[in-house]
Every structure is written in C-alpha cells, then in structure tokens.
Image (cartoon, rainbow, N blue to C red; front, side, top):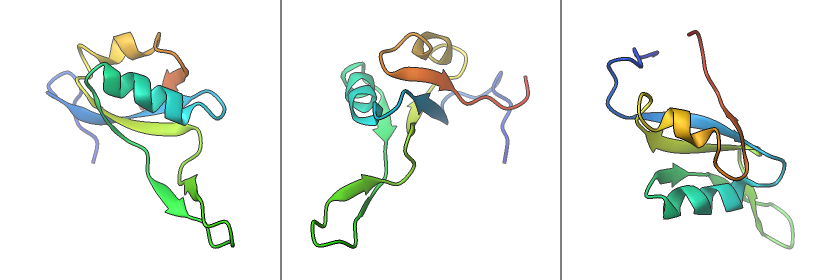
Amino acid sequence: MLSDLNNAGRVWAVIATKARKEDPSRLFFEKEGFEVYCPRLRRRTSAGGLEILFPGYIFVWLSPRVELPRVWHYPGVRRPLLFGQ
C-alpha cells in the first residue's frame, strides 16, 4: 500500500547503497539514530556464513519530509528509492 508521504510521520524507506557498502551504510545510519533493517540469510554451504538478502539495499525508518532529503548525502548511499512524485 502506498502512503501519502506529505502526511506520513515515519515510513520504512528503501535506500540503494553503493556496491558492497550495506554494512558501512547501516552503521552510519545507526550512529545517526535511525532504525535500520538489513536482512541476512545463512548460506547452505560448509562455511555457513550469512549473506545479505537484498544486496545493495537497506531499509531505514525515517520521516520522508524531514530526514529523506538529508540521506542523499550520507556515506555509501546511491539514492533512496522513490515512486511517483
């Protein structure tokens, strides 16, 4: 469901990151006080490490009117994903 961003208080925003910069971006956002979600899955190999479920993207809980314009300039960020106007 799309929400009217002009009236939304806070929303989960999808932020496209630079190649392999999900973790540095996540840490920067967390240091700035944002709630960040970067889901991972355990690999089905003998190494059994974790891999990022959506490479190149993180999810950030933010205010679209106040905080979204600022995140364009954060380290590791390519751009927020925007739909419509």
